[in-house]
Image (cartoon, rainbow, N blue to C red; front, side, top):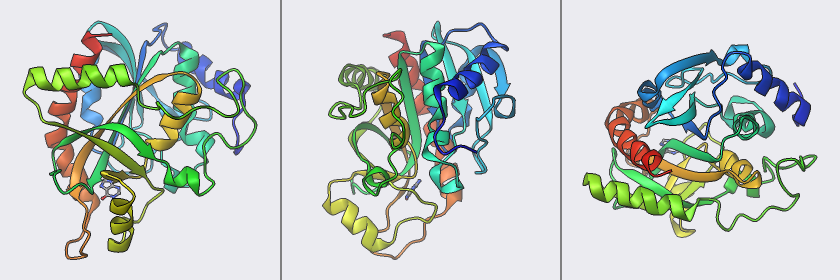
Length: 278
Ligand code: HPA
């Protein structure tokens, strides 16, 4: 498997999807752990299993169905990933961000990223939603930047700006949607780590000291690749657990999946509200 996918390989994946559907997505969506249920909202869905798409990797994680769902939502053509792959599964950064580049080549203008995250901000509770206003790209800072390797000029420049990775106008729409629906929407900084081990109490105290509000194992690579290619990105963290800064409680994947049940209806309200405004 190549560490760096080429434009030709990305387009092979695009062509495999185009062979199954003529839908041109305007919005791409990636659903995090326990959030696959959001794909059930898609109308007249056309399903493409990940195994039918060259170079497209399959998530080995429970709570991530491996299907691409294309259809409409609030009248907007969408392409929804029911489950994502993660760096900790052993895939390359190029592989885990392939779906974002495929979305761009298929015609998408917008990307909605969702994830399950641990709360570092003490005001957040399991089941709450946080609008991601910025991220700490800790994995990228350690050298695992998804743009490492030959630059694909068709998508964007060698040294892309990351000052507005999360689109401000989409953030305004998300806040307004939450307000109209009477839904509590926190906002803050998402720290992206590699996982798969959860953080130690010292890791968490470090993350709090450097300004993180939530922590997880995804999203940042996809957001960097989206920004590089000019996709306008909106990100939501579904809070699944409180980070355990004092080391007195354990964190489990089961609580992450359990919180998903509370989070799917809230995220569906937010996503529908945003799509109505596009
Ligand atoms: N840490 C990292 N990733 C996570 C967490 C967490 O506490 N909860 C859900 N994903």
